[in-house]
Length: 200
View 1 (cartoon, helix red, strand yellow):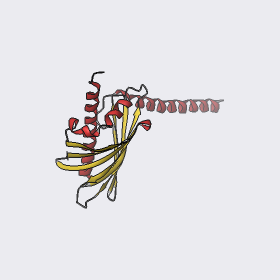
View 2: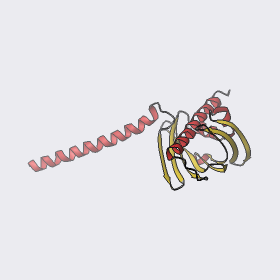
View 3: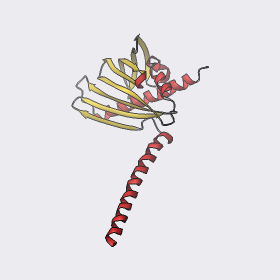
View 4: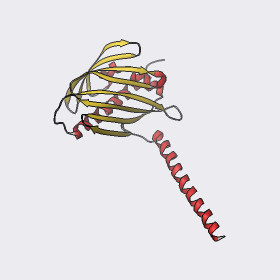
């Protein structure tokens, strides 16, 4: 009888621990939609040879459709970004746009041409560099709605491949990637604010 009682108590304790872990995860997932966040919610940067695998996420307090609409106007970056000095639409065909950007990253000027492909049904925007002096980039922005559909989790995944063999410290490269992502998110938020201020 005593062994049975201890067995029941052990199962009850394991059940409570399991519930506690599950409840903690649910609470953590809920908090990501409620708490104030900086531009970077999470990040993962790993380098292998000459290529860095990139993953950033950020929460934007606007619905997915609103965020996606702002992402489809990359040619307006110079209006909203503190690091982009010049942005120009090179071509627009179907669901693709190519733009040229002149930007400053960690104090260094860079000029790039990027092709974007817009996939509204999938809430994704893919991109790749057409011209770049230092690195070739490719990747995507993926948009996930919050449970109430009022906010958006933006996840950026991609790769950056070195084009020049320069002794650039990895810490410097990671800082440049962070600054570029933060600048992009800030510009996106300003673009959304400008979009929402339009009449009608």
